[in-house]
Image 1 (tube, rainbow, N blue to C red):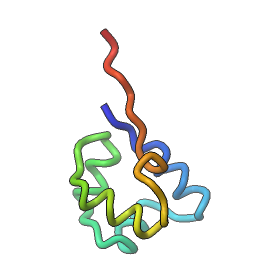
Image 2: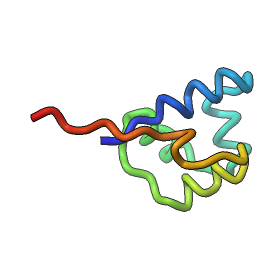
Image 3: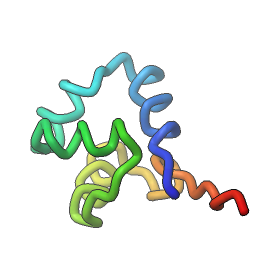
Image 4: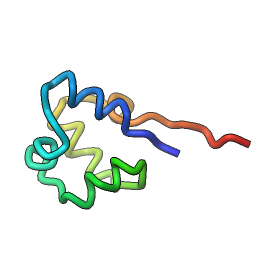
Length: 68
């Protein structure tokens, strides 16, 4: 499973909210909603966010192993 918590923390640090991220990166509201639920989004979305913030994917997502 992937978590977008690092992205949400980055938004707080930059004084942004999810809607401003959506507008800045040209994302749909459904894409941002999927991210809010920890669901899959395309690498194109990750690419847009990384390009906007000039960061690496690991700066905005983290891998959380399944509990067995």
